Length: 241
Image 1 (cartoon, one colour):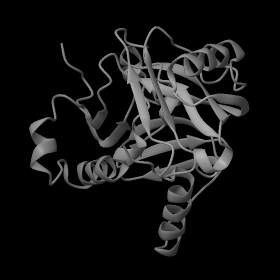
Image 2: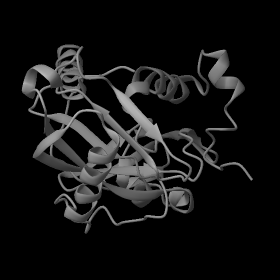
Image 3: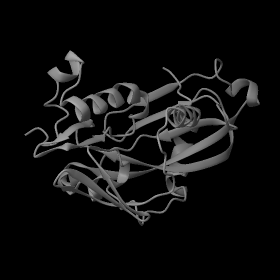
Image 4: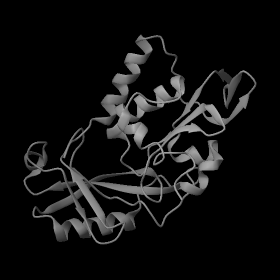
């Protein structure tokens, strides 16, 4: 029932870390991560970087950089629509239009929506977490008109307010685990490499928690949060049997 300004948050975090002396390297493609004696080598399209420890949070590209995770991860393209509603901007604004979701009987029968925030129109999408696995290198980044048409049919059928027209669309990629659990921890045979694949489309809201866990595991081998430590097996790289 909350809304996070993701773009503003990332911009603010970048400003803070730069001010603290962190070097941020934008628009750089990571090609590989390899443990070496005394360091971990990160190969990029701008050359190689050496590090004592590496935290990998590569989203849809996680399986390529940490291949052992590939059997547990699947990438699903999401088509998101923005719609003008009856009553216009006043009816769509934060505090008037609700944050909502509808969960049906099947795994992908999950729809959600948000009020207008940072752009025109209410936001709505189907939350797809299974029965789809796509290559992030080749998948189309154009919104899927078929999916958007089905979304519009759903909104026309289920929402109490009338949809006037679609005013925008975008695409994002979910990295899903079969149970929608997060993967947070060090590689079992290489504690210098810690992975965070906080998956299935609901990662950002948990970023303060998962970020703290990743940093503490990388530095100390465990986190300072008893609740997280008690559930380490749930988030383990090996997965549950």
